[in-house]
Length: 237
Length: 175
Image 1 (cartoon, rainbow over the protein chains, first blue to last red):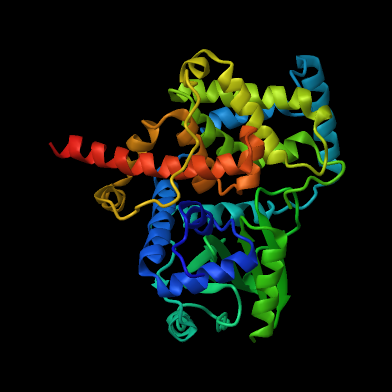
Image 2: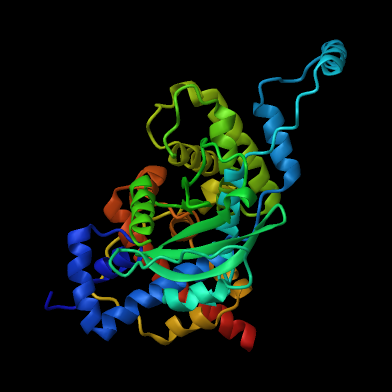
């Protein structure tokens, strides 16, 4: 490409809305043209600033409860019905006490991903170099973190931090692809979240186990991208 | 994961979107109380209309569209719609290296938030859907019922306007 990118191209590149062939050509140009590269960078920074400024506010719990009651299966049960239900529950509970079921972990990890991305400092060690990130975890975690070599892939390492799940430490790697950010949580199997069953979530997730570790990838990208990341991680080890 | 499974209940699909819908409502509505009413009404309407939702299509865009339509027919929604169509044309080259660009980097969260809230609705919402909710252009187009090309040009304009608006907020606060 022997010309500057158009405003439309710069915008679409920063928003990760270009097809791979187009992206390749644009990247070639961006490597040589500081003007276009800084235009893309400014939009990426602006996107991050907008997200930081607008995403901190969660919905009020009272509103959530109100809506849940409105749309839930049982609407306005009568007092008699409630009384009858209470009796049935008490009788059944006296006969069998089922073990408490752990709450599903994936929605919480998705929330953790969103919270970290919305934070001004999502990672504590900022480096694209696995030889910087991997030693940083040493002494902080009871296992060696397999920080992958992503250089031959479309992904890039952004950094990492230590996260906790129910008091157990794990590694968090932030990985970029275009303008998208992917979170990778890594826990030792015996310390990993228990209930990792899938379900309808607002994001793409992928869970796998390898060599005594549990990997959980979370991102707002198509499932193919997350699968591609998993393949890249597995092949780099 | 975004495609609903057969047999999934409305609650299972809709509740994970709660925070995102509330944020969008806050972006559209004038105040918290109005945003809360908007979210509540959206869930009721969506529950009633769930039978008409086509499985396999984008549920998130469907919910956001219901919220938006609910807002647009409300009193403050009718006020927020511009009387003349927005100019969607975009210059071929944009000079991003203006002094306003620097303001965005310098602005604190609060100034930036105020600047975004001061933008016309069409610009404000496209920024929030793209940058906060991470929607693709296709999903934004579906939510706003506009062509994808319009999403791109509106985002370019929104970011240009935001640069200027942040500069104004900073200068007002600094003076």
